[in-house]
Length: 334
Image (cartoon, rainbow, N blue to C red; front, side):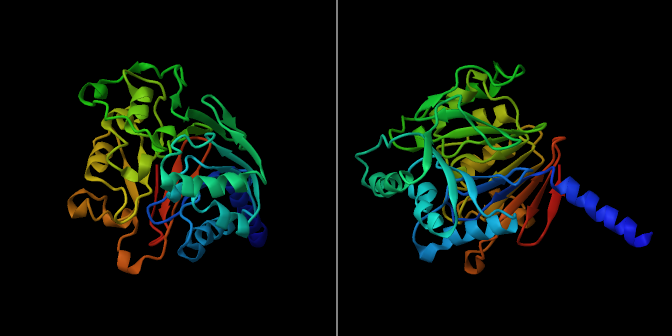
């Protein structure tokens, strides 16, 4: 009877695990790569980090996928054509199968040589795959998960996503637009991801002004539980207007030691009402000891001993979720 009870407990644990959404914020040294694995095992990868570095970022993505039992990237989303997001696509394609690719369309900033250097190899590679240019309002068919596109190619949604969204946003009063960004960040794909009762904001590198279109004068997105911080916590995204509109319980910042993690963005996140936790992939040298989150919530606290630790989320359909720092195995449930 004892062995039967243990077996039943193991089966029960497996069944519960199979109902969860798994999210892995992969350390690509200040770039972006986040893996979503649905309860059915279907996968969506948002961005691929950098090229070069002896395939470092592609290797880390493959390792994260293997840890989640993923053998194929079913949906690859390329938010925009900067090297820290789209640079690693070719190296990843050499290492594991890719199903369908999604992006915001053709590069618009074609006068920028850095953009061209990233975009042209990517454009040649995407012809080998099924591919879709996403428009505002489109959905990515990740099994069991609703993935809604709220910004693409400089356009943003005009109607509230939820019945309780569309409310006036008081934080807009103190936030002003910045000079326009004519480059790729303003064109970035941005998504709201819903799993059961859980809502996640993953807005890529969306620029300050496009975020304001989503948040001001009324909040079109509604509240979320988890905020995958915009643009690595760079000072030209993530204003109080958008962060307070999202009203997250938890934020996860995909910054590097010297990329993102700005004092300005960290202050905006920490000032968000009812925030319960801020996790970072790296200690930010700019932010220093006064503005970074607490040390045990940082996956890679020292650039001198950087092993590329990830931050993982296990999300349940009832809206609860657990965040884990893979460096020290610290986990917290929300």
